[in-house]
Image 1 (cartoon, one colour):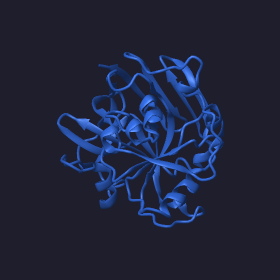
Image 2 (spheres, helix red, strand yellow; image 1 turned 135 degrees about the vertical axis):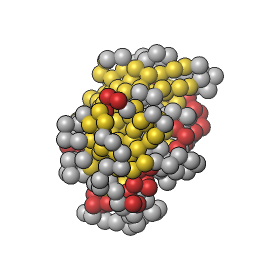
Image 3 (cartoon, helix red, strand yellow; image 1 turned 180 degrees about the horizontal axis):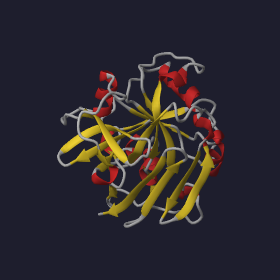
Image 4 (cartoon, helix red, strand yellow; image 1 turned 30 degrees about the vertical axis):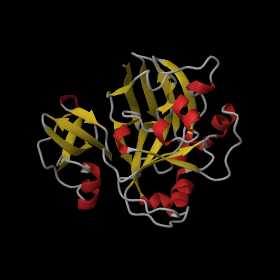
Length: 281
């Protein structure tokens, strides 16, 4: 299944796409408010594969939103592709390097990535495969870890490198408002039985700057889930961004930064293209 979160007029729904991918089947009407999250609530209610709760309509007649907006947590993994670690002059890590992106950073397909040049002048792109949890996971084994996954989506782990390197840690630089585009859909695990075989790439203004495959991850999705679950309980709807491959802007000579008017396209095979325009105040 492909699961989307859409706005239809003033209403917001969690919906399935039909087999053609052109028709939206609403399965849960989202109640908006602080801390509310339609996907998390739909998973808890068990209605994802249930009957429609509103009229089906063409995908072209609704607006795609971030598929999850208020997860309990967004976790991310750094330096998880060997070539990316080396391009930054860092030895590949011996265990997953984890950090947090805060929920205020989440935006959806075609939303703007916004920042002020008073806050950063070195904003970078990072295409990533993101895991969306479907079941509560605590101290799960690597062998069982993928059984707890609901599906996969695309993440752009936008990063203010001057803040990242200046702070000496990553949370603020990765959590500016709009710095976590997600989407366009969540593809459930039945359509992606092996997440370690997916091509992924990032284009800026049509030029391909990252082009790799999840087979090159140092730690695969199952290892990451198992590792994180030993320290913290993973909840349905939690998002885990699994790292970016080589080709990021700060490592290029000269560096490539996201500038006003740039269009960033992050793509993962089998999931789709996440497109966002950059606006600099």
